[in-house]
Structure formats: structure tokens, C-alpha cells
Length: 68
Image (cartoon, rainbow, N blue to C red; front, side, top):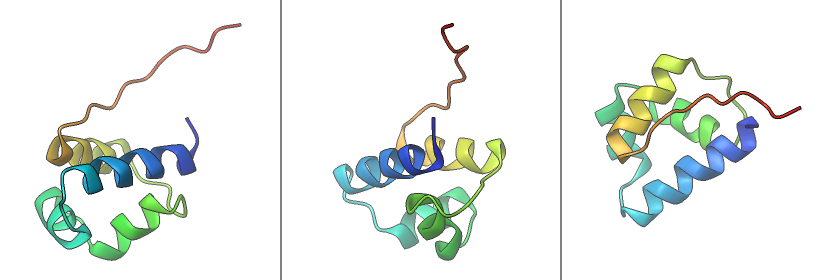
């Protein structure tokens, strides 16, 4: 999954829950600037960061093997 698709998924979920970037960032233990960059596909977040955001938004980080 590309950084842009990940960011779009996070942003869409956050908006569906009607949660601000500030609220999400604080709950996930990251800066608002970091969340902003992730949502725009401009950051390369760690799995730990993605997992924290996913947990706050009721999402799950999954890895899949590509089909050949």
C-alpha cells in the first residue's frame, strides 16, 4: 500500500469519526504536524506510529504478501 493510500485511509476514517487532527495526534502520542504529513502521503511513518494512529481510530495495520 502506498503512503498516499495509507494517508487517505487514515484521513477518511478520522473524518468519518468526526475527530480533529489535533485530537487524533494527541491520543496517538504524535505531533499534529506528523499526522498532517502522514495524511498527505509526505511522511514515512514507522509501524509503531501507524499502529498508534490505527488504534486511536479503530483501525488495524495488516501486512499481506503480494500475489505473483
